Every structure is written in structure tokens, then in C-alpha cells.
Length: 259
Image (cartoon, rainbow, N blue to C red):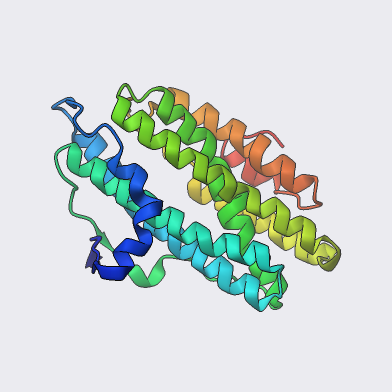
């Protein structure tokens, strides 16, 4: 385990990234934020790490798409999304700082992405695509929109609006890849991918807790849970089902979603 930190070396590498991260500096950082920001500081620190892990996930997706011989525009998109996620990680870290400072977070940087287990390169790539784009990013979009709507802060809502615009494209990559791979996936592969999606849903499902708050990026449990369940049905199970990938009913039930 190691302390989670973000840093830059500067020079030509910072200049290369500058156009992609310019919007962060344009956010209304002069906003006077509320003093009681403890839960939001924790949330934004964890969000920074989650976005960092998402960058690693898309790096793995790009590598596996290359190994599967996927179309080069899909490969390029996955690689480009790594930059999006790194920029999101910086934005989240800056928000944590603005709310009083990031909290200490110990992480294992060697376990950012669960490796695929399928035998063929194509199905391994599909595993990652399903887990990262078809489930993770697809669920993120409606949750971020809800967070934006209840933020109660121009700074936070503007940042979330920018992030959600990127995440929408990240979610769409999954469907495009599965449509391209459609004729190469047999029934066993589709059943496997359905189970992969089901496990990913369970992993991302909200944990019951008391005293949830809303604002500054936080969402109260009473609103979060039904949005998550509806998104699991509408944005995960249905699009996958249309492509012959059935998410097990037990997994959907476990997260409160309809089959």
C-alpha cells in the first residue's frame, strides 16, 4: 500500500496536457464554499483515486483492443479516454483541496484493474469493455447528473457537468465494440459476459448506510439508490440484452434492478 498522490514533472509533458485540462483552471474557484466539508472532502479524495483507476482501466482496454485486432478508431478512443480520466482525477483532487484539503488515502497501485480471465483475446477485451464501459461508465453518467443537480455549488456543478460530458462518450464505446465483435462472440462468450456484467453491478452497488447527505457532490441515499437501480436496468441490462448478453436476474435483483 502507498499514499495516493498526484504530481507532474512539467516541461513539454505538462504543455502537451495543457489544452485538455484548461477547463479546470476556468472553473469558478473563487466561490466561498461551506465550512462543514468533511464528508465532501472524503468523497472527492476517493473520486480522484477512482478516476485514476479508471485511467488504468482504459489503458488496459486499449491494450486488449490492440491484441484483439479491434478497429483502430476504437483503440484510439480507449487510449484517448485515459487522458480524460487523468484530467478528471486532477479536477477531483482540486475540489478536495478547495473543500479543506484531501484526506490521507492508502491504495494499492498494483491492483487498479481486475484482469480478464477469458481464453481468447477478443473475449478478454470484451470482458474489460463490459466491465468498464457497459457497466461502470454507463452507471456513472446518471449518478453524476444527479450529483450535479443537487450540488448546491456553481463550482461543483460546473465541474460535474464537464466530467459527465466526457463519461457519456466513455459509456458509448462499449456498444460500438460489441456491435463490431457481434459475429465473433458465441453463446458461451455471451453468457460469460453476462456474468461479468452481473458481478460488476454487485461490486458497484451502493452500501446501505445511515445519515447520508446531499450537496457538494454528495447524494443522499434515498435518491441515490433508486437512480442506481433504474440505471442498472435501463443503461446496463437492456443495452446488453439487445446484444444477446443477459445479466443474471439474481445480480439485478441484488442491486434492486428489474430484469
